[in-house]
Image (cartoon, rainbow, N blue to C red; front, side, top):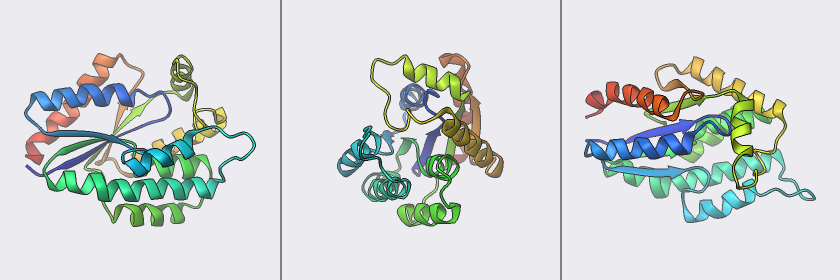
Length: 211
């Protein structure tokens, strides 16, 4: 069995972490070797970059282009250290965010040049794309209210304006429309059990083809 890269995407509070956990358990029950990782922060270097990217700094804000380059650096290390070796070993990787996040957040959200983002994504990944991207689609307001209910304080990105998060959501809509065979929309406002069952159906259709 060859390895597969399955990415979970969506706006803040869409439920990625929860769904990745239950999906991992389900795949393992089928005898599939699974690795769970994330961006940023999927490597030791990435953990340092994640702190720089997500910690709030009032007096020294991170410039938009700096943010983009830091995400690209995190991704380049992640691809070489974690994704490629595990895929080569035949493992299924469940990854919290990947290249679509950069397009949605830094492209649509920040308004940075899309051609530049595409170039950096290609450099960082050496052309490695997801085999499947699960887009958990929830209203921005719903997702942010979930995050605000967490005990942990909001990070730098979560504290952005509602207008920013709506632009990010628009980005995911555009990406899903442009890549219908790779990006599968799942209604993230449904119950956790229902969302998981939908994801199981999506993967159930693909597992026989991938085997």
